[in-house]
Image (cartoon, rainbow, N blue to C red):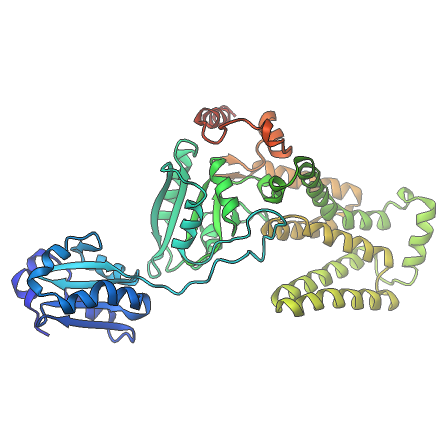
Length: 481
């Protein structure tokens, strides 16, 4: 097709009709239309544009107006003039219509992606508070944050990751509260990623993780806008990834994974009690099964006489040592947990309940395991569910096997040895130069009390989120440490 503008002002732009058609080839959804004797040509991907906006904003005006009257129309903000061929290709992939007219190239935004409606999060449920959650559309996720932070101090940095996918990544922070050193380092780390595609925020996390061999998650992820906004107010930096309903948050500490929105949405006394209950559940799920193995294998003298008789009767028919017995039941629990998670919701709940009861009862009657161990393993499994973060809960379940192994070989000494190793490992971890178990190590008592104890709202510091001096004071302490 010989076009009017190609011969007249081709030197004004590198982008042209032939190059664009050649880039996309015989794509099924590639549409090109011409108006006014081929002096105006439109090219767009039909699967990425909104048909109603296309008709109302572009096609109808082109049919009704003369070519000479379009000069003022092209000056509107809807029409963005571009010069590079790469800009044209990226614009079309974002849902823009490319228009060639008068020797110039324009991008017109009439995108209309299909998106999932805003719904309640299935993985992070709360009793009180808002119930909306992020979806896979970047624009929708930004609007959910903008509704809660009505301030120009909310800043965004737009990046692109993936040589082929060109996935959009947004870094969000509040100016004056966030640490700009961390913002710049995060930006540099993301820009340095060289991969073909990034499909989800959890894949991006694996590329950014400084300690990939650690079982503990380094980045906090959430689907809830209220949690994301709270993290921003606390001076954190969050990242939104196109196509992912989960946002990432950094720098994150070990204690962030034990917080829930319900802690703030109910009376502060209940919030404090539940928070301490979670740390008790952490200790139970790590140590309880391992302690049973240790007592039954090496330390019978620690068991009370009345309980010892019941334990001996319960284990009299079991042919395996406590170590093998505990590993067997723990693996069965993990199988049931994974089966329940992968199956449809209604079937998964049935498998978890019926499977646990049937297998447990049959194992006791067959003499494979004891009644007391079933109680111990079930209690340990229930305690792991109390941890709000799924990522941290999965890590704790993995570490629990390490405790059982140490208890099976060394008894109580092995349990204390495992506790020491985990503690040393946590102290050594850092997330963008921020200590992982701050404010416990290094110890900032005032900050530690704020994290552990939820005070009444009328006792909270006024303007603590907007006072940059407080944040700078914490930064200075970190540098001194």
